[in-house]
Image (cartoon, rainbow, N blue to C red):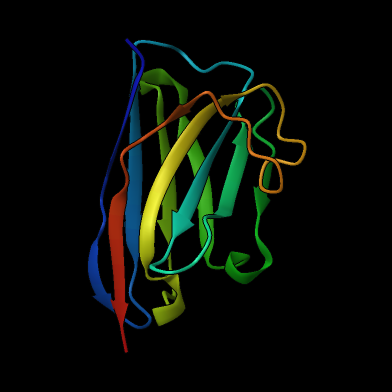
Length: 125
């Protein structure tokens, strides 16, 4: 059974940092796209960052470029999202996703096979 489990969320003040982890079990995501999404109350889900596990190519939404870094640890089948210089507008439930064939249109048309349950990130001013 495929399972994605996120961890690392929490509450921080503006300018703080958090590192999210997504541990995958039941499947090894080689040569696929994995990503992080978020959804704030009353807003639509949006793509935050993605990585193609075959090449290591990364993709970010404009508002997090230079602040967030997505990475992978293939040895333990884990996806990470390092978030620095956090802002109140980053407050949301963060979800990891995996199993999309390529990262083309990963945010506009997310076709990931597997999703985690989410971890809450709250940034206070």
